[in-house]
Image 1 (spheres, rainbow, N blue to C red):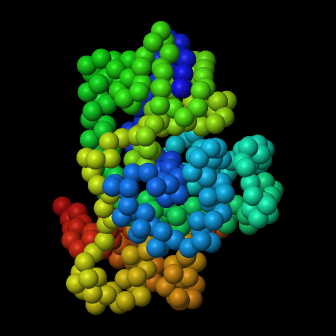
Image 2: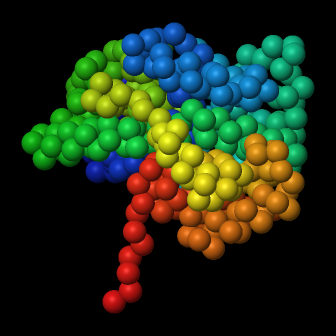
Image 3: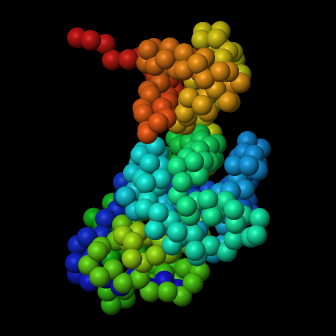
Length: 333
């Protein structure tokens, strides 16, 4: 059982997050991929995701986030940005001392120790590699399902707001899970896998909804970090469905843009660096940069610099083309 101890100040500072957190969804979907629970709901997602991810991507990530037990807290920074690249930048900027402390809690096999030691050193190359692994995983396991996840989130958000309106914060807290009970300024969650207490001490609590959270709410291991309780939203209201165009639509897009440029655009449904675009489409960096520039000029992608890398992501217009429906840009008056 988890017992979260509130003061009057904590109740006043309790907030309901109004978006899904991309890094919590990444972490919890990584857990789900390693489990067999939720077969009816996640079977097709698991099959599709496993088919598209290589052991070179999954192996290092599962070391940091095993399906049972401790996962490194720094993978989900408390800031909680709704934008994946911003959240990833926050994760990669975590101080080295915290990375070392988090990694010390992991049960690491002999074969995985070199990878963990490299991360503990927080060298630019090892952190760049981690960022690349997380970006690749997110692009396959989470980003394609964004619209269906958002639909389920919006339904859940309306429910939470109705609970607050009808019964205040107490009703909101008890409503996050069937096993949650409010007793004498303490929120008890009997379905929590371990017996523990979290004392908020005036810091308040951030309630974070999650699509991939399964069975019971979860939290960070380190109670000294900003308190967050991640709770599962109702999966049944919206099945996971990957976005994508039909074969005929994709052929039309190939005819319009050319096969390679259409492939580059398709990759940017999740954030991609120029190097990733080149690697995935088997073209040179210069050619990938050229195609990205052409797509950007047409308003189909946006490009942003993050450190020494440039990251590309499809605009609403670009996504509309990929999904088979043209979105007209606003006309000037």
